[in-house]
Image (cartoon, rainbow, N blue to C red; front, side, top):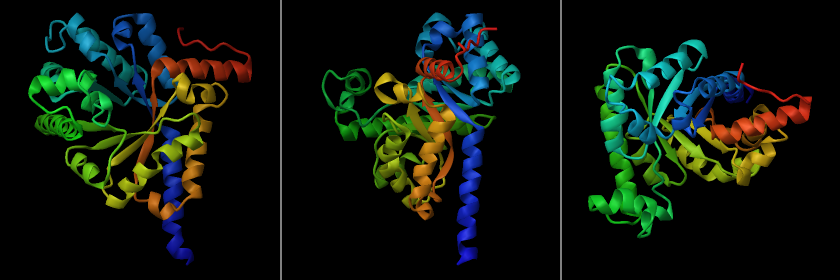
Length: 313
């Protein structure tokens, strides 16, 4: 019996090591950060100090209106930011986030094709389209009006999910056509066994929503989805999303460090059947989002040390 248990025990320690070494961060308000030296430095210094080795950039549609990202004569500001993040602040991966396949064709992948240096390019394409939300099923809803009806797609769960899959398939095709390695990331908040198998045809990494008020409750929220993922034995890279928004873990993170939050989540994993979880390829935690996380970390640091930590110098 001892030798049969040993691989699982080693697996636990392996993933504990992974969790402790890396994190990913959604970056909101990026349009107001990009091009502002002080704001860029604060973001990147904070990310480095908290062991975030991956950034997922929001608001690229707004950036694109200000400086067309497919135009090599106008996208140097973004190229400079990505280069500095990787070379000076130890950020290993920069993801470009979008809501549709067309946006990746016309903006994110088009940007990558204008740059010749790998350190100026996106490493991952991140789909942020919530096919499970009422906004996709209801007339007047955001996804229904902006993506489905205008393309002749029914505003219902099936139409929304098919649109999501189509976007992923486009992203995967773009990634496969690239000369560099590009990961396709899918944000997911709900799925069943059939849906996740369809999603994983086009996906290298899934980011699973675990929004709740504490780390323990976050595990409870994500447990069903994790079990479905474990059952398929798909071995896709998997990250758990914890939200620092005030209605979720904002209050909790004012009194607990990111490390403690992760430890409590993992303890819930360990208290359950590890033979199930060992079939899930966990890589790290992802935090939503920068504005809330930096606020919570500053508050937790001040409460614990009495010092107001700044990341501007």
